[in-house]
Length: 169
Image (tube, rainbow, N blue to C red):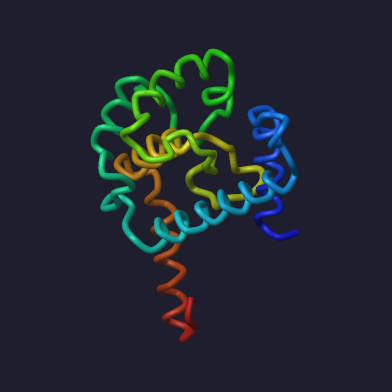
């Protein structure tokens, strides 16, 4: 199956619980899955080609990062525990954090794919469906705290080896 079809299974379970019956159809799930996968693919390519510590994901990265670390200072972000994002106690903690960005970050509550282990690519096993503001908060922290350097370093090593062999990477 295509990568976006695998993503569809991740998205499907989330949307089935959150969408009103009158607009819930498998076609909408598939459209959301493809859009979420395209966003994930663009982001992964970005952190593979630009040093993540220099990336700005939004105009308000500083505010997002400060509020995220104030609310979730002890959250391990290199390898995420899905329970820290999806359990009922976690949702109760995340909800006020997310809502403060309503009107500040466009589409703050749209569904977005997030890698659980930041050293790995998006796969069915390594992906969770979160709100866009959760994605921005965690990925901004990963970029600033150096966790996404592993992806960038690996991509640069691959390009270097390919260049030495005369192959385009």
